[in-house]
Image 1 (tube, one colour):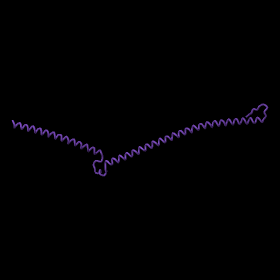
Image 2 (cartoon, helix red, strand yellow):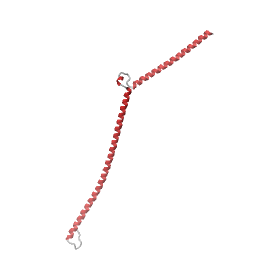
Image 3 (cartoon, helix red, strand yellow):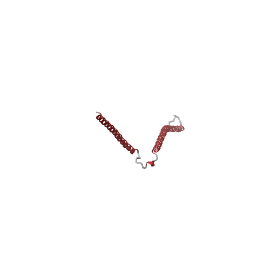
Image 4 (spheres, rainbow, N blue to C red):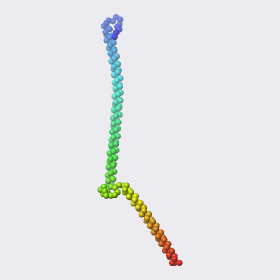
Length: 156
């Protein structure tokens, strides 16, 4: 580095000017480093803010997942309780199962089939009764006609 001295200045001033110039360069470098560090600090602050937002989102999502899990567990527990209640009611309706061991009909399907057979048989019986009444009416009608014919034959 060459220092320019004012006219008539001695060598003593030249050394001082060199020191000032070097100090100025170092101050410029320090100022540039400070500016760079400030920019990095701002970027770091922005990164920290983003990380805090992401952590908050993650915390809210975990709370939401926990709420869903608790809701699902409650629904499953409620369903199990309802099934146990329904089973208890059905057991109360069916009574002691040991009495059913010797029965032919152990479910509703065969009972339903047997009831259908019995209702068909009942309809056949009702038709037969109707036919018997009709035949009885016809028989008594024919008997009445025969009695009238016989009575008219003896009277005239």
